[in-house]
Amino acid sequence: MKYLACLITLFFPLLVKAQDDMALLEETDSTKEYVSATFKGTRIINFQSVEVPGKGVLEFMIQHRFGDINGGANSFFGLDNGATIRFGLGYSINGRLEVGIGRTSYEKLVDGYVKYRLIRQTAGEGSPISITLMGATYCTSVKDPDIAINGYDKYHYFADRLSYSFQTILARKFSDVLSLQVNPIFIHYNLVENISDKNNALAIGFAGRYKFSKRMAVTLEYGLKYNSYTAQTYYNTAGIGWEIETGGHVFQMFITNSSGIVEPQYFLHTATSWKDGGVRLGFNISRAFNF
Image 1 (cartoon, rainbow, N blue to C red):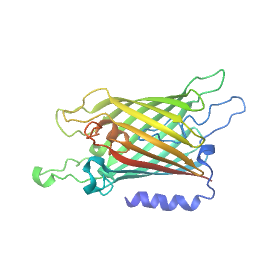
Image 2: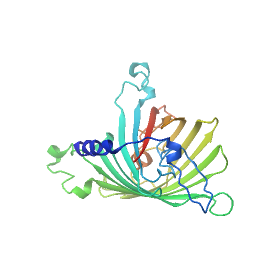
Image 3: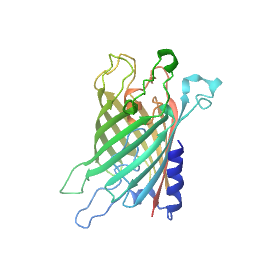
Image 4: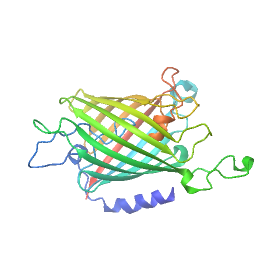
């Protein structure tokens, strides 16, 4: 949208110094020895991680999903198909509180979120886990495709374009190479597609990271829906990825069965399954700026 483009245009002249993402994700406290880099980025594959950027850090992220691999060679295994893309900006005020905004091509969705690092894992005595809270609002800008047929606009009220999610992210770094995370989530739709659909849904995500070299790691995630809020068939989201630190960037490449990039899309509206080969190649790339 033009508004997001304006925001990006305003933000980028302010960026005066780029630093290594890993250092920027760390915060210091002289009284406690915190466990650092539970995850190396603010995203794992689709899921938000327990991490937030450091104090005064602006993170710019590009998230990209290609088409289904089972399209075969005719579609170059999904690379020729239309892609889903999200551009996002997240800024941390104090190393604990992050505010962000993004625009996703899928469903023409604009999202805004607040993420707060409530508790951070400490070495020795203290907290054995990290806890981060997150709330997000999503607004679709698509037009009602059936307005001419039905004679009314289902998005007549602006509130009907909105949905929300609230999640608690819990993680623990068990060693220098292994980190695990769980994130229960509540999702609410102001407007549902069918009269029998429910406005509220619950899900839970499981994720892990295994570091096998100084700068490389394998990531896994799986999302489990608690309740069937709709009679339509959707599948649990799952992904496996490869992550590399490249100086000032974090680059993540993966395979997932989800086309959607934000929480209501991949937790509840994943329309293809691994069993049927309905998976796609995707990547996330982030750049952190300190100013």
